[in-house]
Image (cartoon, rainbow, N blue to C red; front, top):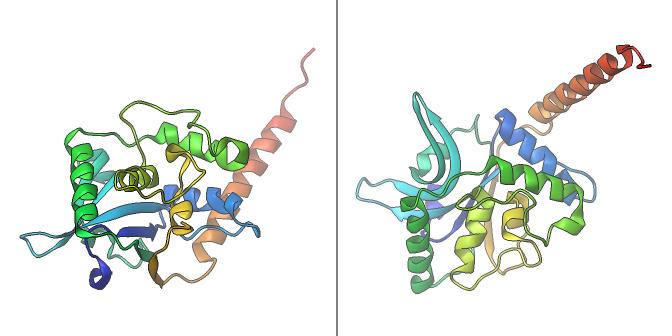
Length: 225
């Protein structure tokens, strides 16, 4: 990914944690064959800093020992180098000029400085909209002030340079899969390193098992009255 990590480009990754798998599964509603999305997170490349490392701007949940970061933040790209944790990676180049890149990064840093929070509540609102497509163009049902999750963060920053990555979809209903399918002209660099279906099948079975357990408990309840 380092070879393509130029400032102003969009990064996508597909993680293997439970929350990543849940996000990937929820986006199956966007696919005609109900195929899971490869993507669970989106971010923007900031460029190389004085430490010689590539950095990204993103809105994310990050837990490191006793330090918890929720919301807009800067991180080294090395965060996504683990093949086990992030088997699917992509870089999207929308051909921004130098002025647009500068604006994009400046606005992103403003959100970092302003401590814009990561919103799990809005994420749930987006999942509701995925099941009810008529809600996708409307404001997120669970929208909050000064809160934003990853792909909504990316869309918002690109709007500041006059580029709507997901026309017809409200900012806070935008998913990583929507960004991946953007109709805006771009070049995509893709790396898929996961064995198809391994963790996906295991996670699906856990969900089915949980539903079967809940159904069995419901059936065992004595009838009222």
